[in-house]
Image (cartoon, rainbow, N blue to C red; front, side, top):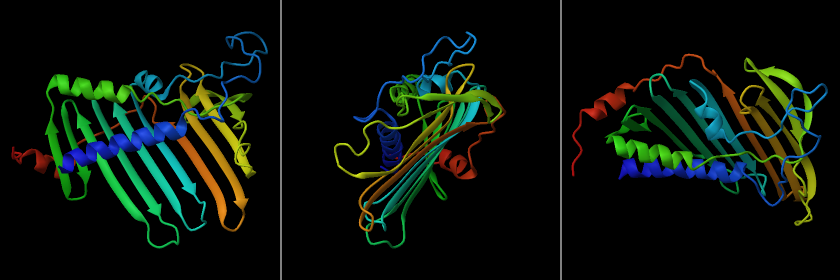
Amino acid sequence: MKKRMMIGLSLLVMVMLACSLSGSPTAQAPGGNPQGNGNEPGATPPANPVNINEGLASLNSYQMTIIFNSTGPDPSQSNTTTLEMQRSKDTDASLTHFTISAVKKGGGDPSITDSNIYRIGNDQCSGSEDNWSWTTMAPNQAEMLDITKSMLGITPLIGNPTFVAQETVNGIPANHFTFQVSGLGASSGATVNANQGDYWLAVDGQYIVKYSLVLETSIDPQTNVLHEEISIELDQINQPVDIAFPQGCLDASLVTPTP
């Protein structure tokens, strides 16, 4: 039961992030400056990113961190979801670590969920601290799991981007774009206090190296302020990534599960 809960929760987090990062009624298709293929003198480089799954699949190894932080409408309530992923294609290994910290309206101590999912080949271990669950999957089961994950092809919200400059981010030559979410506050009548997006696309591959979006609207500055921040950071690109099962997983692998 614990294993099923952990897998279900991890998929829920990924779906939630996908919904948070993907298009919404306020999104517009990338447009902005006229685009060529990036080779013409003075041409604006392409602003359309490949989806995150496609970009990551092109890399031998990486570490990616996605943070979704929200506060409001009551100033005392907040929610922060952090998803950290490491992957090594050479060793067929991955590590997904996610935390959710939520503070209810009225304040108080946060409710915290913290878990890890290790996978090396067809072996998978999930849990945290002293509570681990081990699974050895059949090859077709592992294949199906990979297909399910590939369905969550996240493409972050981008609207009418403007090219800034070519910059080096996390050791990768990247094109920097800025944008604003169109129509924010239009349907709600809320005051827009913040609306700023930035992202950097790898010159070679069009995958997102870094992404940041800060939004804030308010109806009453004392009781109804919504603030959201979303960030994506990709680093250790094609650098050695060491992923190994912790001792708790190795101990769990020796325990024969009951039917």
